[in-house]
Length: 170
Image 1 (spheres, rainbow, N blue to C red):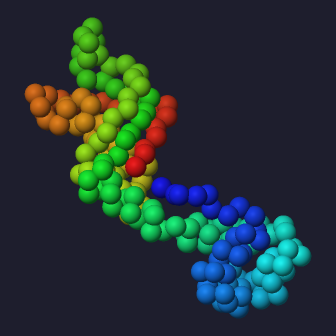
Image 2 (image 1 turned 90 degrees about the horizontal axis):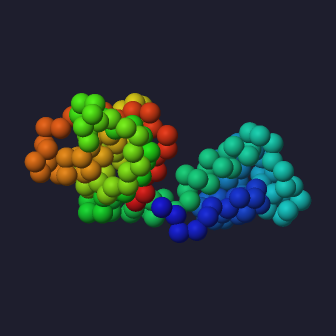
Image 3 (image 1 turned 180 degrees about the horizontal axis):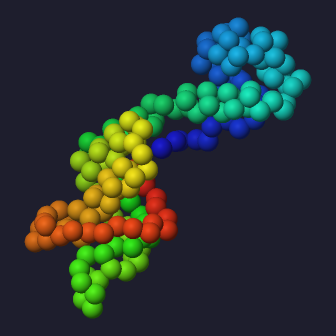
């Protein structure tokens, strides 16, 4: 969702944030909760290692400002037309033991519909719990992979558990 990496050093982060504050070291200092002199020391390179509180503030503020329009566009594209690609390794159970649908650990990579993508993105942005997100992802995988969009297996119940890894790409 990013086109280039965010600044890592304290000086680079200060420079980036100063541009977001239209060049004002005074407003940047107020935003970070430090003195104007502190901001100037980092910008000049006189100081390089911020304390834990300042480092956390720099990271948080940089991440909140770093290419927000690129992330917003990627979310919009996924929710409207592009969908998401979900890759995972987890236990999926579909049917009784001894059948080809018996539960087992599977590696799955599947493109999910924009409607499922929108539901996952909205839930994540609204601060859904991990369990709620797990359920939304499970439903998306079940629909796209096992039910194939409702064709022939619309009522199929899918058990999704023991997730070893999960990647979601826009």
